[in-house]
Length: 161
Figure 1 (tube, rainbow, N blue to C red):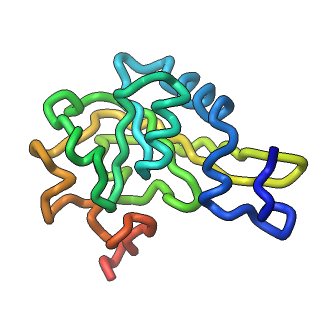
Figure 2: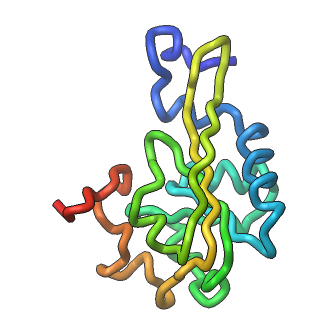
């Protein structure tokens, strides 16, 4: 129904991540509808897994600074140049490094998940055009632009510090 922690302020990110996937997947597919063979991307392995399950689509990929199984499934040749819908959320935001992986992007669309009048989680959807996938196994290489933290949960400041 609602995370217990939501009654004492904001829901914790782990609990909040369990809610709203019908609404989220509907929004992702609505945005993807205008694209030809779009990539479906998220900023974290948890959201990628939940979106893939919700859509019954194993092709959803995570683009994160954290090493996860999606890094081993990364197929640069299949992803190169494609348009995409990128899903991020307040705990794992869409960072400038994510946006720089596209030739161009649309402004973000914000989606809030509510339960009993409380905001559990805020998501952003960005449509990106011309994904630049880099070389094969790119997420495992030290020059991967998203490898900016040990856990991939923060955006790198623009000055690189």
